[in-house]
Length: 189
Image: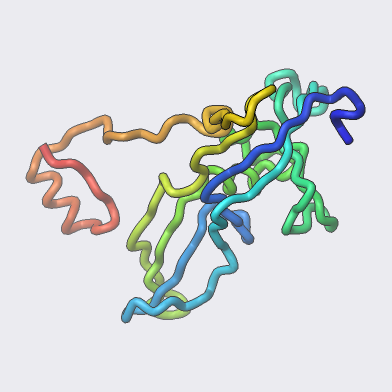
């Protein structure tokens, strides 16, 4: 319909798409001390999810957010009481501006949430034991104009993942950090 109105529009596919039900920007999995899944979270990761992007000028948000906007014709969650999603600026998603309206936190999580595993010792005590910051939002793609080739648009949604920790510590500091906090992984010198 938007193309019929002369608005540039394209289909986007996001592989490893997060469905962040509680909008905490992470996909949480809870296990007990024996490693059994506790099913305490409604978060999930889908093999893929598809939405549309349309090109808009955003007078309501400012020109910084002009450009491609996410519109989901098949929203799975209510937003402001009705099933809708967008228009969320891809620029806002990339910059992490999740405080903006139009479902920016939900779309941000779909492409950039952390997958976190927690051990739940009791109703009041839990411990994060694993966090995967790279699983979500892979090969975000659209179809090339005039051909059937895939165009990777992941860079429109997120910055490249950091491959190395940009600082180094001594082995003694590394050993101490392991004793102090088993959750932090650091490369030793």
